[in-house]
Length: 366
Image (cartoon, rainbow, N blue to C red; front, side, top):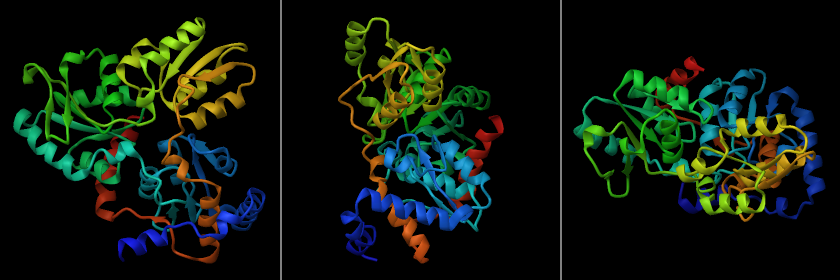
C-alpha cells in the first residue's frame, strides 16, 4: 500500500464532519447498547469529555490495559488513548479479542523519542563503556519494540506509580540503570532514592553519545534524552507566579515535569496520585496542578468545593491524545458494526513475547 493510500484509509469520512454532536452521541449509545458486553471502551484520563462520557473504564495507561485484559467477554476493545497504550492492551489480551484505536494518528511524542534502532545502537555503545553492569527499565509510555528490548535484556517496565519500587529492584540486579524514554521521571525517581545528580548521565540519541562531565565510573543512572512535551512545559517561573499570587496554595505536579519544577513544588506523583490526593483533600483546599489540561479541567469540575487551577493556565491539552474525539470514536464503532477491518492495533507475536517479559517482571513486583 502506498503512503497516499495508507493516509487515505485513515482519513475520517466526510459524513462525520457534518453530523451534529447530538446525532453522534445517539449513534454511539445505540451501538454500545447493541454490542453490549462484546464491546469495551477504555478511556485515558487525558481524553476529552466528549469521549470520556462513553468510557467503560477511566484510568492511566497500564490500569486500562490491565482492565481490558481482565475483561474476557469483550470481543472488541476500542482504546481511547494513544498508540502505545493500545499496543499494551493488545499484548495483554487474548487472540480472540481485537484492539482498535479510533484515530491511528494518535501517537505519543515521548514514546516516539526512543526509536528501537537508536536504542539498540545506544546499548551496544554503552556496553563498550560499562560492560555487563547495566539493566534497562522503560516507562510504559514506550513502544512495544522498546518494551521488548527491555524484556530480552533482563529489564522491566515501570509506571509513574511504581517507579521507585522498580528502580530499587533494578539496583538489586545490576550496578547501573539505563532508563528510557523519559529522562525526567528517571531523574526524579533516582534522586528521591538518594542517587545524586552528579551520578546521572544523559544519552543523547541525536549525537549518539553521553552528555556527562566527570568520571564515567561514577555513573549510576543513564537517562535517555526524551520527555513529555506537555509536562516539560511547566516551569519554575510558573511555580513562582502561583506562590506570589496564592501563597497558601498547594502545588502538585507529575514526575514527568523537570527536576527543577518538582524540586520547588509541594507534592509530585502519578496521575492517580494527583486525582486521589485532591479528591481526599478537605473542603476549601486549593491546588495548582502541573499536568495535562483536559484532566485538570475534569478535576476542577469534580471538586466544586475546592479552588483548583492549572499551574500554567496557557498550557494546551495533549495534542496527540486529543486526536481521539467523538467523530473518530463513532467511526471506529460503526466500522465494528459493519464488520469492517479498520484501525486495528496488532503487535507481532515475537515482539509481544519479549515485551510481556518486561511487563510481567513489573507486575510480579506490583
